[in-house]
Length: 220
Image (cartoon, helix red, strand yellow):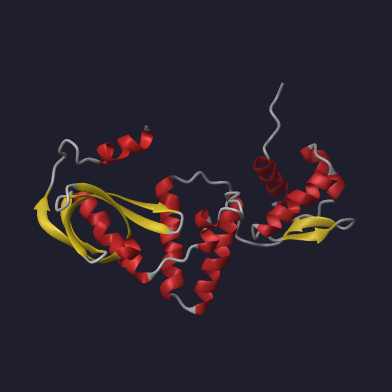
């Protein structure tokens, strides 16, 4: 028995049909997709919520307005993180037109990813970073790649640490480090880091100080 397409796959099929720019009757679209007209109307509403300009109404027909439409894409975690960062930068420093575009683009990405409205911390459309977080990203990424020690100040304390990972959790950028000063792992929101400076000293993997060592207790 063949598997039924998921709602997202079905909407992709609907978009493919509408891309010819012609007017399509709801009944004909429903027949092509092997769904009820009620389901078709729901799919069209979902496309509209995601920002895709489907024009028309029941009894008249539907057509896709001229727009820049990207076919379905498979994005890696790093690519999604890059989108988060790009939108964050636009919200912080762009002109009003681009700030508004970043807001609507975030909402469209949420709709395309089927991000639940009940999970605001993972929504692109609600990303509200601050400038301090953004200013530390480049320093940390460079230090992680070069395996370079860093000096950070957070919560009024100065730590010499090995930067192990920079990740995006909901609306928080976090740095995972092994602090040589306190001989402990740290997971610090970038917004709570006052200053960060790359040091000339390099480090190599040492037992008990690696990213795998940090993750191991979390997986138990």
